[in-house]
Length: 429
Ligand SMILES: CC(C)[C@H](C(=O)O)[C@@H](O)C(=O)O
Ligand code: SF4
Image (cartoon, rainbow, N blue to C red; front, side, top):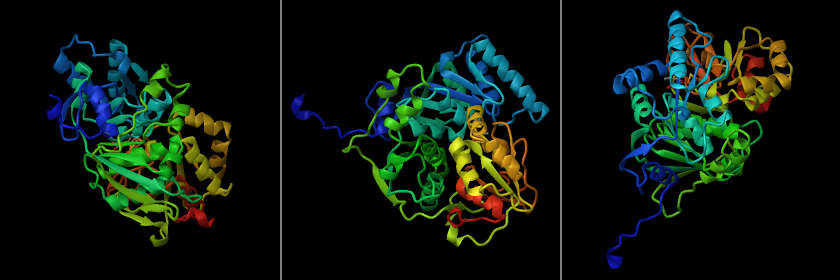
């Protein structure tokens, strides 16, 4: 057959990961049944996944592999309604029955806790019943959100159908200026690409500035891949990934085993951004791709600052915001809600004296959870109010009233604005 052999061009990183998971060589556009390495559910989407699982598999069924499933409580915690409390009871019962690891209330937001506690490995296929599951792409994982009924079948079989995505390499070149962050970079990219511009693509973040990003910075970028429609948003794993994961995952050899790189002769498209002259960016109401450089934002008074979420609720984010606040009090009429993304991140803030500094300024530091991010248990906005948030979505009604306005920014911009009372360029204070 030598003479007839069809020469295969190389494979992208995502094609390689899905080839391993499907036990055969796959290319973009193919439909494949792939083995899942890890599955995550949380308090909002979990109950339906559990119900679906018992419906598919039978009341006495066991999940395919309890060691690969993680349950987290983060959206409505502590329980903010009777319904939430009942959901929590049901999920705790499921975890106990099936021997599933359960991170109960106060552990933190799912997308922070998953990597922090060693449940994410490079090269893994990880599914979560939450759209921001793409955050684990920061560790070189093929991670994506699925619906609760898909998850029910994953619980039963450990497998799921995928269409192998095409790859868009997003080259982030240059060097981020001081007080301009990876959040500004990803907001600019989303502003340019559009909310559906990367639909079902595997976005691969490459280039000098991307490689230089720390894990928290990479998590911010991967987290927002879904806001341009991407299936996954991956940073190829490297030394930075390894240093973060060592000491967190039990199987240290598995870290490097997942260091997968795409081939240069694979089929992909590429776009480039140079961030050396990037300004801080703001996503204006009411769409994440409605992005303006801060110099073009009209003077905008704010009522609330929300510093937190799986996008920007890590220690480094809170530290940067606090630096911008320079030990000054909140501007008159501004309230600030600070929510560290996990108990571990909260402890780091405590040790560094950040909690005290925020509270002295007049802000309140809440226990780790999703908080006001999706208009959850507290921090809702009333009609006409404006909030500057470090989270990832600003849709109509996202944080309360449909007549409220949510602006998205970096933690540096949030800190600077908290003390001035209007959307402020952190380079100017
Ligand atoms: C509640 C959940 C389904 C939702 C998501 O999938 O993203 C939430 O986390 C969000 O950010 O809007
Ligand atoms: S912090 Fe916000 S974006 Fe992240 S999982 Fe919670 S609600 Fe969704």
